Image: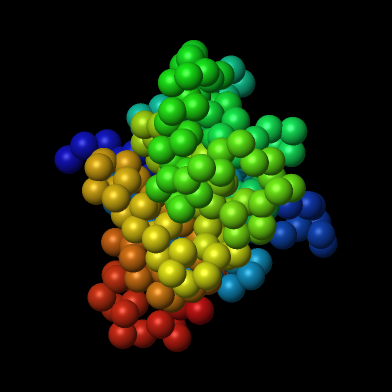
Length: 238
């Protein structure tokens, strides 16, 4: 079998010390294979976003090791980590994190340009990504000219653009109506069918059902349940 795109081993994350100590994650092991779509569920405060941030090298674990596309993140320099985040990992943030001084297309194309793609090439890919999320022709609009749902779709397009190996999405459908949310989930599925891996945090049973596996976090520890079990027992996961 090939090496997992994401491999997390004995991951622990602790905040504070003594009486103030909080264990956000405890001895977490998780593999995500190429082409696999994994959903993370659990109550608020269970460690879902912390797990996602550690998987994408936005946060460091207190204990354990993370490997992305065969590279142990703990062995990489800051420059190598930054390149891995730009090239191998696509992020869809819960808070969008769009740059207000850039247009929608510029927000999407910026990471591609930072890695040497020409402005014209990057803009072409950005326009394709915008079309995929239903924002065709809106590339020249600034974030403050877009609704919350439109901003979220720009953030999704930015996370999916280019040849990403690992897609990380934190509640990507939170500001979207049901039909648009399902179209976004379809895009994630298509990326996985093309060979990428996806790890998505969601509170919605209907959206988690798009995944190949569902991982429930409880008090910083994980339980894994198959999609078929999930389909008949939604209440057990949320």
